[in-house]
Amino acid sequence: MEQSRRLRRALAGCALLAAAGLAYGLWVGRTGLALPCPFRAVTGLQCPGCGVTRLCVALLRGDLAAAWQANPVLLLLLPALAVLLLRTAVRYVREGRTAGPRWEGAVTWAMIAVLAVWGVVRNLI
Image 1 (cartoon, rainbow, N blue to C red):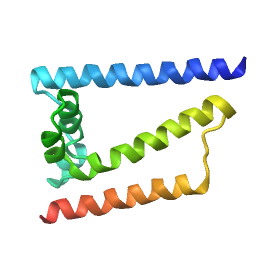
Image 2 (image 1 turned 90 degrees about the vertical axis):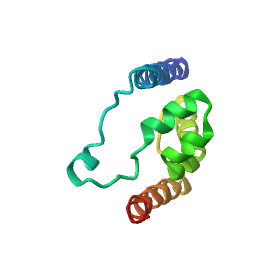
Image 3 (image 1 turned 180 degrees about the vertical axis):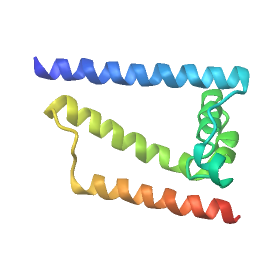
């Protein structure tokens, strides 16, 4: 009984997130108007996530070349991020907890480190 409640809750959260992302992607795709990066607005530099909107819109169009051009490092990290999020969701539904094994935390921190390095490198090249 508790498991089915957690499943409904997880699915509702995923559906809400997907709907919001799709609506934002359609809005940007049709109008060209997107939220500006606050880091770039203040510093003039690209943050590790700059281009994520263009990346997502390109993926919605199925344009991998444009997605790569928008943010190649984030595009490469997306499969690992998807696996981690899926594992977390399954664990939540089955066990009622989100914390995973240490290796998942290590992978998360490694991805954060890669993005931090990317944030520096992309402004030097």
